[in-house]
Amino acid sequence: MERVTGIGGFFFRAKDPKALGKWYNDNLGVTSTPGNYDDPPWRQGAGTTVFEPFKQDTTYFGDMRLQWMINFRVRDIDKMAAQLRANGIAVEIDPENYPNGRFAKLVDPEGNPIQLWQAGPEDEG
Image 1 (cartoon, helix red, strand yellow):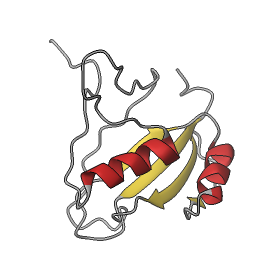
Image 2 (cartoon, one colour; image 1 turned 45 degrees about the vertical axis):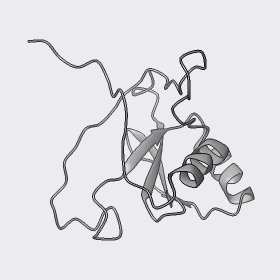
Image 3 (tube, helix red, strand yellow; image 1 turned 90 degrees about the vertical axis):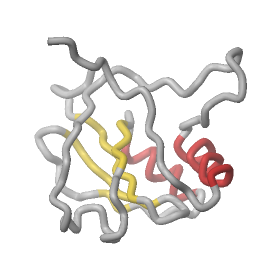
Image 4 (spheres, one colour; image 1 turned 135 degrees about the vertical axis):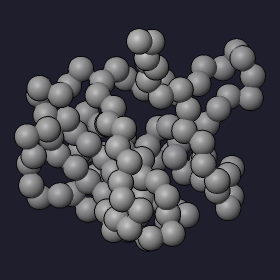
């Protein structure tokens, strides 16, 4: 069976796409799609990606009107949280260390939920 090799894009609606794209670039290092073919797009590191539909009534994402939550892999969750907090962004680090790593939650300026994941040693890759 032929399979996809990874996520090639993540597309979503925004009230102010330019401002939200700048926020992701400035705070998380996720660059927007380049305006030409000479500039490189954002590249993610190789590693685990979880693809998981949740029940329609889940509260895991927060606001029930929101249909998605993105999870970004990070090398050091404490350093990333400190960087975000220095920029005035509230970050909640889950105090539990799970077998597959550590997690933190925040929201972007439009209220979209973001989860950060520092993989455990067996999940790095």
